[in-house]
Length: 410
Image 1 (cartoon, helix red, strand yellow):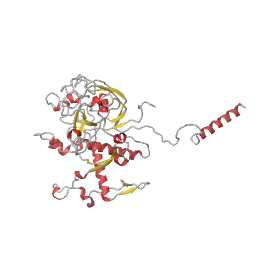
Image 2: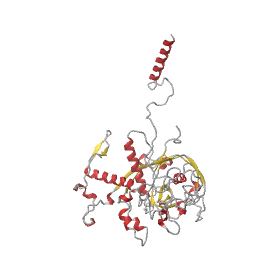
Image 3: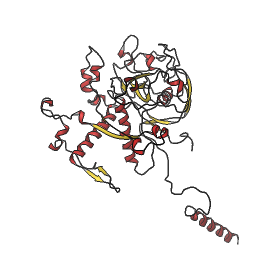
Image 4: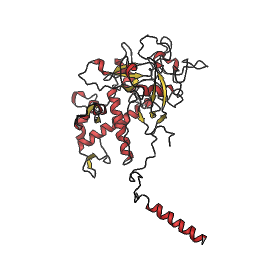
């Protein structure tokens, strides 16, 4: 009898389990058709945990500007590229834009199940095809008869949603919230000459973005709009790979506060990513790529830029958060920003138009560069550049918001 009772109990449990998911039995059990979510681990990125930090000057304010008054803020966790975006990584973007334009010219399209027209990436391209001549320099623009791509033709078109307007203007139409832009994606290689008067830097103009010797060096000559377009393309690339898996987050530039949180590596109030207070270690070796002394550029191991993973990373695993190249953030620059921004995920943006005054086009850059003194390498030092300006000492890296309270919150 005991064996029969156990068998009946076993089959009763099986019947109950089989019924789950088919009927709610009048109970509140939530929607049962939800997709699984196991999180993501983007290649080349490290996790920066949620935390609270004191933003603002952690050492003497050399210029007495008081534009970095200390303030405690809390930041949600996110993924960040462990290095600055390299020439070879950015070249993937440039070549994707080139190939997409070539496919469009040749009419290589296919349709999805919804009737949307899409580029057929399976078609192999032949750039000797005369049908693609419009992509190349012609006539007097050709140099020594070479068949060279006209970089001005490499334009990326994209869209985004203005969430700030959607939140503040309840009468706004959906169409008015969809913003569009197009931007030439090729880096400004002439910045190596333009940035330095009476200085011979033509070899960098000819080779820095082209030559494989510099593949792993940070891309420069990219303005804020180009960096933003890169983030949009990277999201598109990621979404295509993931297919039907749910993903509403996008790659983007970090906010100024996120950048500082990541750069500090958990060392609150310390002047440098490795802590400090010195720019050299106990052996006298320089810990970042900047302008030592009165201009001994090669003393730190690099005359200009160095490889993106040079020097030791900070405690979050991030390389060159001080020096090498300064980095774009998504934040608009305002001298007194810290006084009025929120202390929870502070974020101050302004979508400057071409017709706006130049003062509206300033974007925060952080980290200092190979041509800066150590003051600009401090995690708290703020600086800015115009969003449509490209420099030989400014690059960028991407972030991706973590979906959840913390990566350890299971």
